[in-house]
Image 1 (cartoon, rainbow, N blue to C red):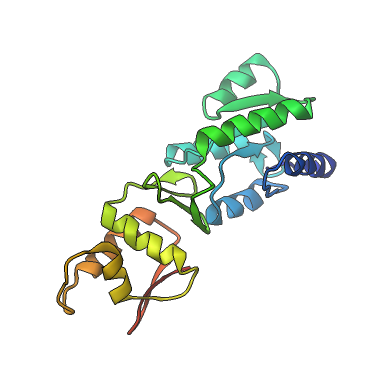
Image 2 (cartoon, rainbow, N blue to C red):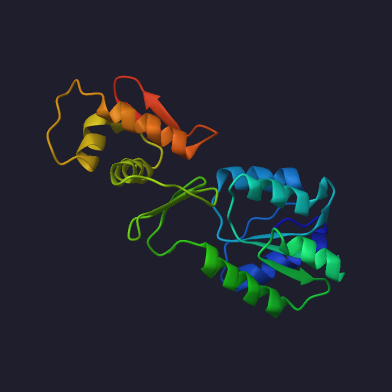
Length: 213
């Protein structure tokens, strides 16, 4: 949640946590952008007018880049034309003043719409994998992975930042025995890096294999 009013931010944070949500808060857009760059979220809540500018422009920019995490604008800009502008890019729009119970219900609905199955999902930073559904996202953006790319990424996430040997990654993705000199894993890792995009999180550990950090 991005909100520059300290009292309101703390109150909403407490209410959402009391309803069972895990919540990160930010007082301005740069802080929110930093959190979104390293974490995956099922829903985001933005005040429209923040010190760094109108969050609508920020959300529109990220939407054009393919970001699809559900967004709710929680704002005092309640005029009909403002709501229409907001809903061009956001999934929901709630004016201030508001009822906390209504906010909780709307956030819960957006989380169900946008989130993976958190009971079975794996997370590291902004990457979320749901092995049961073969679904993957980074920072809310769906990743179109092949079965082998998914298997390698899953093995790396399960290592929790520790290096994984090449032989283990090959065993995770290929049933057949491959010659040790084969570069098929290197090709797959290059493709996976491209799909994950920046900033880089998939690193080579010389003489060992790869790690995700």
